[in-house]
Picture 1 (cartoon, rainbow, N blue to C red):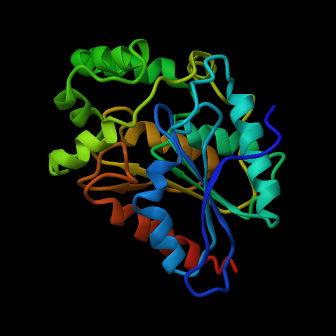
Picture 2: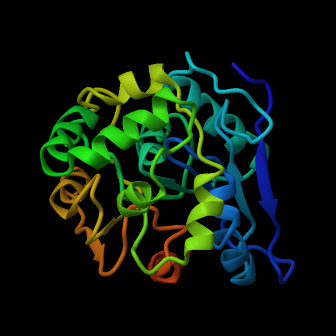
Length: 263
């Protein structure tokens, strides 16, 4: 277990913060994905914001290939301790499972789950992707086998981003993708109900209409688990924080936080 977190930090632009926000990335990427748009956006809205690099995901680290989801949960809990105040947890994809599994031991004020891995795990959604888009399914496996290097930028664009995202941005983002821990992917393959459960803190669930990995029907499973209604964003693919319409997701999160007056 690591003894300190690796976080990108941005302080409130106005000097006095609302509730701190901790962003947790998904598989194959790192904390940098939040730094592109979300961290400056929320710092400008008077939030202190953190984005944690789960172990093996920082640009200067080798993949921790035996890191488990429990290890990632430990990384989040260390970051929460370093923040020093109960944060709002925001998790994307794999990160959404990580923050749900961290809720029991953190004192989070609220949680936002973006394009979350469904409660039944990755296995069913992987079979669905393989049946509907076998070329993309094979490309994702190639990224895992060949240490994060996609063979086809076009296939990865279709898998993760909207067609409107500029090619230069697609290239830049794909160059930072990396191999994911095989142990973590194994942990995610199975039903997650033993580790996650309905919580009494506020929960937001956001999905994307054009998400090939977790389409709206799967996102709604997570929302149903927590007794809320999923918000499905139009014209958005899986990588909500990097996609061309990223501000849609950022605004939904900001409005949700404002309504709950999380000071």
